[in-house]
Length: 426
Image 1 (cartoon, rainbow, N blue to C red):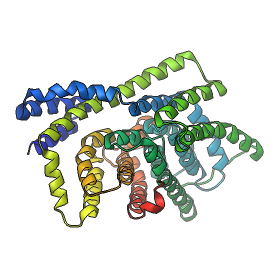
Image 2 (image 1 turned 90 degrees about the horizontal axis):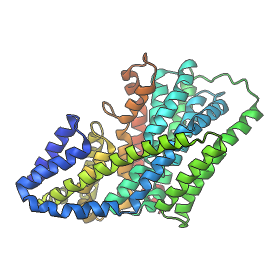
Image 3 (image 1 turned 180 degrees about the vertical axis):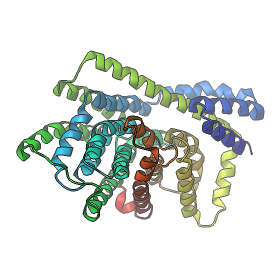
Image 4 (image 1 turned 135 degrees about the vertical axis):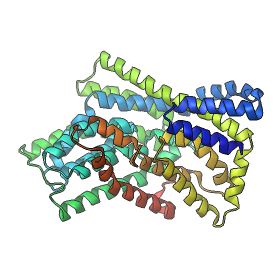
């Protein structure tokens, strides 16, 4: 009963707009003291120290820094402009270039907000100017921006690795094929749309010489591709841990800014401050969630949840279906960080008891959380794009545009559910 009250009060406070970190901490403190007594929180300093000493979580600020460097120094802009000109001559070419660049930014940064804003500022005006179907244009940008949730080095995979006690390198490796599959499905959808309804995504007129375009595209795409290979290759080959590779990525992003001539100490200062803000938010939520999990666990609520799921017919498949449905519905209203820290610890004991592969389960959760960025009314990608879109572009247009991509994400999620051995790299 305590767990239900704790969970319900936390959700109500989140829906009312209270800060996530202080909601978790405050509700846990009030309910914990009332039910279990203040002595329970004598363990809290040790838990906070354990978080601060966790070397896996050091990768979070490094990858955030890497992503913001690439955004602020104009690399994302160069990628989008070159790719748009390279693919623009075919129906849906600008949309496909947006998907490709979204994947590259995802593999370079792992930061969804940076990708959506960059593509919204650069790619959206090009598509609208060339009479793209408005919902299609907005849907492509929102969906491409969320690829950072599943394509390594994804911040959510790092968080899930810590919460679930799974090696982050294993999660990065397992996420490669599902991420690539999403890119292929999005691209095929745009190509099919270009064939069936060419007025939705018409080709653009490219006046530059094809050879010059190809050379410029190589100059803009190859360096970040080398950075991606350096970061992920060092992890997959076992040369470096995810934490060490995040440092490689951070230094590599600065070197790229020097290569393109956009480096300045004032920008590094601005980027560092932005990194501190985002990182502080993540760790504040983590500390609040730790208090929440402690009260939930010590009240015995996790055993009640475990008994409930274990008694359901259908075993692990019923549990997987209900867990995915719950995360999908919660994603309509609350952010992926809250879900990762609030819901996943509740589901973990059941998954372990049912002998579910935790790497596979983490990938399913990550893909589901990716969908939460697109689902109205509170999908964060929708807000990111609305913030940089022209004023005449209605919110309802953005909502309409993401629906096909939500369906595609759910279909790919179902493929990963039913064909794990074929789609998850071990």
